[in-house]
Amino acid sequence: MDEMDEFVESPEDQRREDPPATGLASRRVEAGREGEFEEWVSGILGAVKGFPGYLGSDVLRPKDAEDDEYRIIYRFDHASNLERWEESEERRRWLDRAEPLVREQTIHRLTGLETWFTLPARAGEPAPPRYKMAVVTWLAVFPTVLVIFTLFGPLLNLLPTVLRTLVFTLTMVTLMTYLIMPRMTRLFSFWLYPKD
Image 1 (cartoon, rainbow, N blue to C red):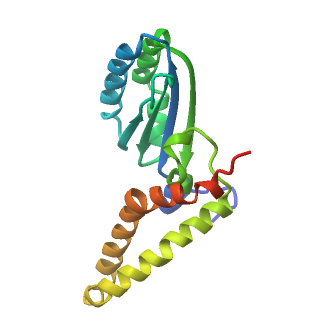
Image 2: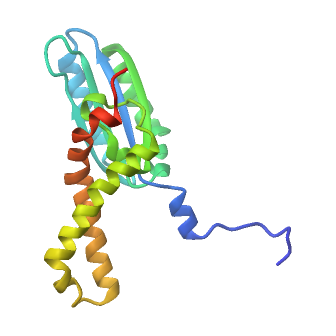
């Protein structure tokens, strides 16, 4: 191959460089406009559902009358799909509609492991250092793997290698994403997000 030939990335390289991504939008709503803003939230969430790669969203509403901050978290299968939504004309129209309702907003994007380390009360803050995320992830993975192998190892061993690996990884990722890591993040929040 001539050294002038263009390098072509493999599909695996492209997937590695296009990880899952989470968008975090924090908005402070003008007093008395909360009802209108709630309608706006329903509308924009309805719009984002139609975009490729959309996985789901959460709305964290104010806790009490003194709190005026809404946090919207939306997840995509790939950073490129999140970017497509963020740069879309549809989203631009919805943001224009929100302008009179909102007095302050911040928007962040998270990819990779840091999406596991988002505390609802601290949505929008920078992710913890990578070494802390690695330690907490290992503390979650080790006992989970041990329990799965102890309880289901004999059954898993009956399956062909590819099927066994598929079942195991699907179980692990689902448990880690929806059950274990949100609890681990809250449990270790004192270390992950120390107060200044």
